[in-house]
Length: 472
Image 1 (cartoon, rainbow, N blue to C red):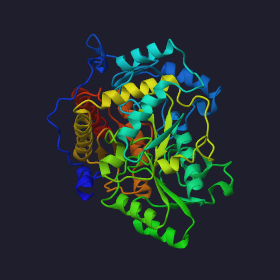
Image 2 (image 1 turned 90 degrees about the horizontal axis):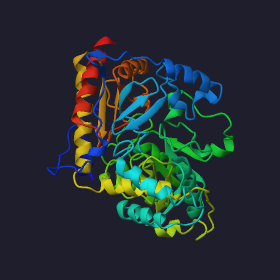
Image 3 (image 1 turned 45 degrees about the vertical axis):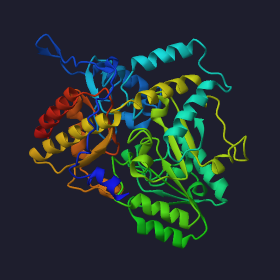
Image 4 (image 1 turned 60 degrees about the vertical axis):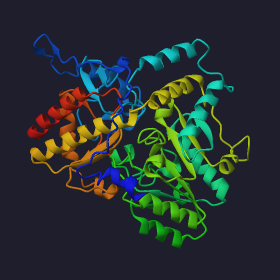
């Protein structure tokens, strides 16, 4: 256990590099896109006039002008951009500005945007139909791939989002244990279901909302919280609520308070405590699944939970989610058992196809070594640029997931993350946007790299970061 975690180093100070495989990663040339940043010898003028016009229209059509809050740039200020197209590691807005993208559709685009092989497979699948509302062979194929990859999963149920997966897994944990209380960690986000909107991360943290109006007290009265990386706090909760805790749910590496890694032995201790108290351990791997390693965070850290939620990557950029775990637990799910959950588009052929072809690519030799290498170069470069220009900064990464904070650190939990200089991040963010680099528009979100990101992308990003950091 300890030897595995040490690969992260003190991941929220200067990171150490994992040993990089000598195998050459197999990367499709179809996802490489050269940056076009000039017209002749003249650099293109950065403007967001079309985005501004379209966004003003959108605000009269949709709440806040968006369909997910963080996209509105509330915490970073400035004009939200409207995207026109994506390819590989790059994206273009409707004003024609080009960006190196480190959001990756919030994680799914691990092999790069609009991959030619995935698009070709989707085209063939669409010829047969887009949704059946009935079983199809593609569900079997993706289920077999997920089960063979993720240590904790013996059976899996596909749904349509990470939120839906977490809703289902919570109901299942309560049904299996006959208990109602759950423990979650401050700053961890498990979707917008009522029971989880307690000291949540992601957009809730970005907007500075303590909880959400419209959530009945009864819906959250059985949700208990503890600081991430605090074993003693978890032990105290169990001591106070003996025999009442159904499950502990957590992001094994936090991605919704920025990027925060577990301390050595934290996950092992949580696993032990849950077993000792007859509670289930749930890993929310919607972000980390198939990203930290092919078997997710649980394979990377060597800790096997009872249940796991997945999303993002397993749909290859299409809406998807899943929850799975031990067979004896999963057989409680209808129609095999009494715990009801259903979905009109669950297991739809398009999401299954995109997921299958994305996972096939991730199985190729050198995949995760390349992600670790490219991400390490990026994070180390940004941190060095920050220190060189006189800023307090720390950060870390594992494989294709990363984050940094404008604070000396280290950052071990949400309270530590909130010490980061959010105003400085906002200035940095807007400056990087003008330099053609797109990070998540919030201090409290992780970043993502892909197999399509090149050393050229990374070096261009580091140079832009140093330029912006000198200005702010």
